[in-house]
Each structure stands twice: as C-alpha cells, then as structure tokens.
Image 1 (cartoon, protein in one colour):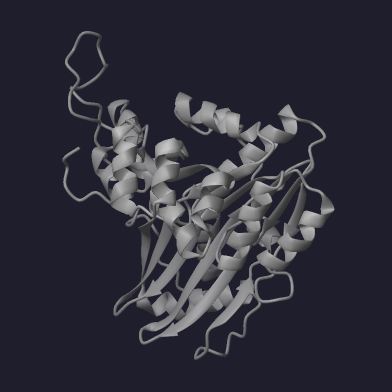
Image 2: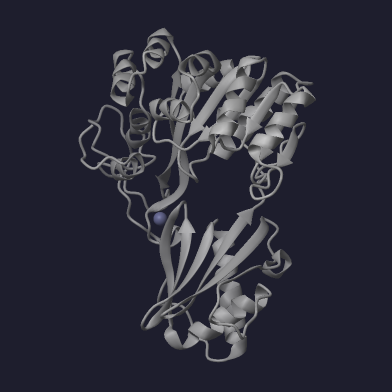
Length: 397
Ligand SMILES: [Zn+2]
C-alpha cells in the first residue's frame, strides 16, 4: 500500500493525489482523514472502525501543496498558514453519493499545517432493532421497555459506541409497533432521520438548549421522547420528571457502567426515590472491531470441523482489504441492567458503586465483557480487541 503511490511533482498531480485520497477514504468507510506533517514527511491516516491507520507517507516537499489543495477544496484562505481554519468540502467534488458532508479543519503546528477531513455518511441502510446484534435476552428486554408507556431508558458508552444507531432503531421499532404514537427527539445534531418522528435540533450555545426545549416540548403532549444526551442537572431533572409523568423517555449519559450511570443521576441532584421510580433500565454498549474476513486466520487451520477441540481464537493478520489492520467493520457488545427490588433498595440506601456491582454479580448479570466473549468464541473478533474495548488489561476472564 505504501510503496505503490506515485510521487507527484506538479500541481495537477497533487490535485489527483488529494482527490484519490478522499475517494479511497469514502470507499473504505473511513470516518476521518488526517494529514499530519512531521520532520521528513506528511503522514496520511484514515480512521477506520474507530482506529487510525497510516495509509501514505508523502515526501515533506509535497506537504504545502497537499494542504493548499485541501484549503482550496474547503474554501479556506490559502495564504493564511498561521491560523486555524475550518470549512466544508463540497460533496459534489468528491463525486460520491454516500457522503452527506465533509468538514475540513486546518491547524498550524511547528512542522507545518495539519489538516483533518471528517466524513459524514448518509445512513441509507437503517438497521432494525433485531439486526443490531444484541443477545436474545437484551433484545427482548429492549422490546419490553419500548412497549411501556412511561419510564426512562438510559444508554451509556463513549462517543462512537453506536448509541445513536440503537436509539434510532428503538424509535423506529416503536413507530412500527404502535403506529400513531407521538415521538419527539431533541438532538445535537440530528444524526439519523426517523420517518414519523418529530426531530428537533438543539443549539447548545443558543436559546434552544436541551433543558429549555424539553420543558416546552412536554406541553406538546409527546408520548415518547428521545433526548440526545443528559449533560447537566437541569436536563436530568426534567427528563426524570417526564419519565414519571406518562412519557417514555430515552437518552444517553456519559458513564463507564450501568451502575455508574445511576449514581451519576444522584450526583446531579436527582433524589434516589425519583431514580428508582422512573428509570426502567440502563443499557451499556460498545463496538468491537470485527476480524477482516479476507485475511483472518482461523484457529487450527482450515475448517471448523465438528468434534474438534475449540482452539483458542482467530487471529488478526492484515491484508490490502483492511489496510493491514486485520480488522474490518464493527460488532456490538452490550449489557442491560433493569432496576429490580434489591437494586432499588440499595439506591435508596445510598449504596456506592461497589455495592451496586456486587448486587449485579449476585443476580448473575451478564456483563458487556461476557457478552463480547461470544464474539471471540465465534471468531468474529479477538480477545485482545475485546479487552481493549472493555478497558481490561490482563487476559484473565
Ligand atoms: Zn484483511
């Protein structure tokens, strides 16, 4: 991959080189393209399935021309190399209909200007709730919650863990199974269009914040509400109240675990009895990279013959198809915690994280890590990838 790039010398070569780098990124479904200047070269990286991979190392002499070409495409000031600039690259210029938007950001560094192009794709193939890859138990719990008329479902996980996709699938499931239900979303920004739902875009630095919009929306008689994120105490308070007063409310929160999300609500000043009477469940999810089907090495050689002892696991190798990462595409791992009476009692008694997690262990809760083990066993991903996504250092289970 790195050796077959021609070394362009004149301006037209740079135009086609940049065009090619943009087009290849889209072809491979990269979410970002980084142009990072170093001492001797300009390193081009794609973010594929959440991880950056080096695609090209261009000679330093081309650096200025490549960045200048990007700035022309992005409508930026080509003569200003000393200030950060942001712009958009017209989608028509990339000639690909999968792309909705391309945003360019240029930043001066001691080695020259660094540029990042962020790619936004059209979500043409929306997935059904049943296709997302939840275990049968989690899927059935989610369907039960979606059928309720009130309560709060919280989703946790870092940015890029597929929460928006899950929320969109849940809302579409509700609209399909209960046609005529009034579904309203508050998002920043609206990422996925949902037919049949009223979607509202929040402007965090303007008048329309999550809290103000949510307060007036409740007077519009919605039955199902989706709030992009609970970031502050006021939004949390209104959301919990909505869940207590005849609305089914879904939202996301930053937290590493389901128990952590419950405690975070308390830290935001929500009374324990309000949490225990409104929250139905917390879903925690991540995406793990899937082994590249073209190059993955199955355990014990060719076929997974019946009767053979299961060898440890499939391995990541790397090929042209996956930019030598060994991985291509991502799969969901998740855990869901429904509030039951021991958990409610513990929350009311102001239990800490350790105590809440002990209760979950006692009831035989399937953790996200345990859910991910099934993907390792099926050869979909590796133990190493699962450990890294779950933040587990040692290889012990
Ligand atoms: Zn491969």
